[in-house]
Image (cartoon, rainbow, N blue to C red; front, side, top):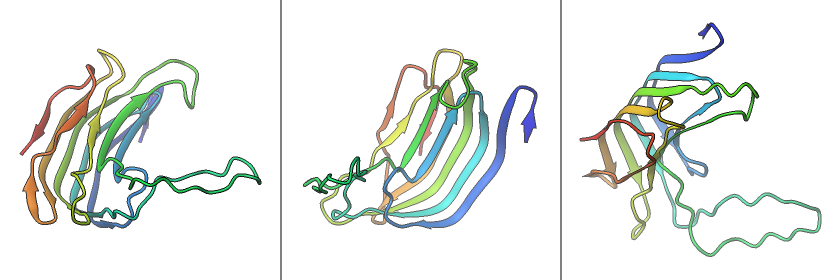
Length: 159
């Protein structure tokens, strides 16, 4: 839905989804420029991580030779972030709020750590807030994820 001077993305549900080979972050919300994003629900999502996955390497020239990193790639399972002036140049920031992640099932190879969760707002008046993680499971075991934040992040509940 478009309103006034910018986009509003709201009342969205992603349900019963399998994500194989998560390579850039599985459940991402990026508020670019002025977007207000709210009332988004992720429910019953299954995501797979493998110790054989590697970060993407983009070929910069015809002469470039692919040299895979030795370490496995562990992208965010949840990532919320905001930025400005990437798509438009008017300096108007958005807002991300009221986001729910319910029953997120992550399957990893043995010995892999819990994939990261990252939430960050843009400034004091353009925050990422009211985010709920209600049930995150690693290989069938319920966990309370550590959440990486910045100073512009509001309430985050993990239960």
